[in-house]
Amino acid sequence: MKLNNEVNLADPDAFYERLIDTHNGLSDEASQMLNAKLVLLLANHIGNMDVIGKAFAVARRGLVAD
Image 1 (tube, rainbow, N blue to C red):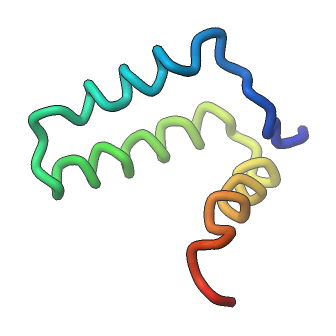
Image 2 (cartoon, rainbow, N blue to C red; image 1 turned 120 degrees about the vertical axis):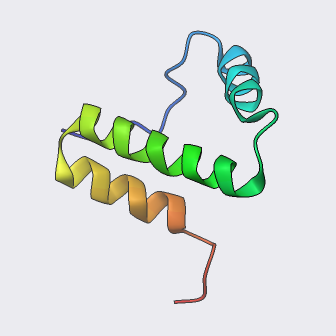
């Protein structure tokens, strides 16, 4: 299975709005916990460690000096 880096959402703006709404009213700590739970739920849904590993690498790119 290949990691899809192309836009794959019918309405990306609606997705972003829903994500932000989901975080509304949460403390920074609760918001971080929500993000962690989302990562675990979506990784479980994907279920393919090669794809998940590629996603981790793409997400990390540019965040730290390696």
